[in-house]
Image 1 (cartoon, rainbow, N blue to C red):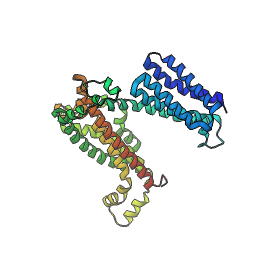
Image 2 (image 1 turned 45 degrees about the vertical axis):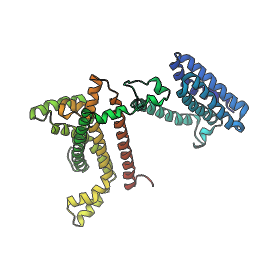
Image 3 (image 1 turned 90 degrees about the vertical axis):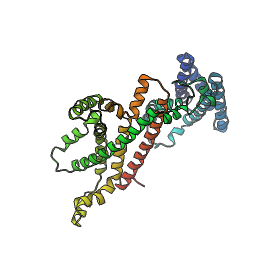
Image 4 (image 1 turned 120 degrees about the vertical axis):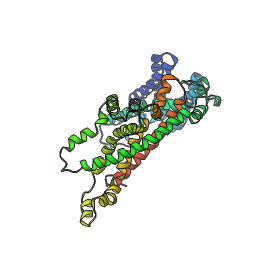
Amino acid sequence: MPYGFTCGVVAAAGAFFGLFVGTAQGSGFAGIALGAALTAALAYLAMAYLGTAQERSFKWGVIALFAVAGLLIGGLPGLIVGGLFGWFIGWFIYWVGRCRYRMTLPPYLTGGQVLWHYSFRVLCGAIFVFLITPILVVMPLSFNAENFFTFTPEMLAFDPEGYSLRHYRNFFDSSEWQQALRNSLIIAPIATLLAVTFGTLAAIGLSQPHVPGRQVIMAILISPMIVPLIISAAGMYFFYSRIGLQGTYLGVILAHAALGIPFVIITVTATLVGFDRSLTRASANLGANPVTTFFKVQMPLILPGVISGGLFAFITSFDEVVIVLFVGSAQQQTLPWQMFTGLREQISPTILAVATILVGISIALLTTVELLRRRSEKIRGMSPG
């Protein structure tokens, strides 16, 4: 068996995890060295002496070893993390040492291709962890029983006394938070409706090959996605103040609609790429007018793209804070604005509860977008099944 390769790869994984443990204990270098040495020794023991006959016993032994070490270092949380790391190392040693990583790959791939295959996935996983870590920190903190923005000793010890729903109750009982929520639920749906209406019409019009300068028009319409938001907000403020829309619900709604229109245009345009235009010509030949053709033939086929764009526009409006700070007033204070004010003036953990709710809403909407995307591809015959 390739002992050197297996021990080296497993030692690299152990050093990576040892870095975090060592840093938490005050010495990152010691954590790297100890993690690499310990995991490399376990890999050599498994490959040279135990083999596959004792694989199950070895894995349970590694889990127990790291669980006990985690318990001694970090208590109950350390026990859980150590057990999970032990399970990973036990599986990883045999996965690498017995060349199981090649079982799902074509046999003709070179070593460099195999390395790139897994390196690419590790890189994507690292980026995902980097992006998701702030969410993983905020959500548990929203259940803190104290008015702190840090994990209390009770929380780290998984003591039920350290967890509470008080911040969620404060959100639903506070008149300020509820007024901000009502404003968001008024502004975001109306802005989304306007964005969907104008964005869909613009996408359909720009998809016609005979429209002159459609590339330039498209660039102008999607410019709110490119121009820095602070510049758009300042421009809207000076323009709306001249025409009397600054500090009004209509001004905020129109501003949010302008931010949402590019998302609708892009998603609907992508849906129209695979649209069979012979269907609209056939409808016209059968006597249907353009309005009937649009609602009976074209709209059902592009509906997943329209809904996806609408959901993106809704998320943009519901989570936006910069535009409403410039264009709105105290009467139009939305939920993100209230969160911004809370961070600046009074550090309240209720913000964490609201952030957790917004994350849950965003995840639900994005999941819906993905399901609609798959449905759209199936309708257009771009994916099997």
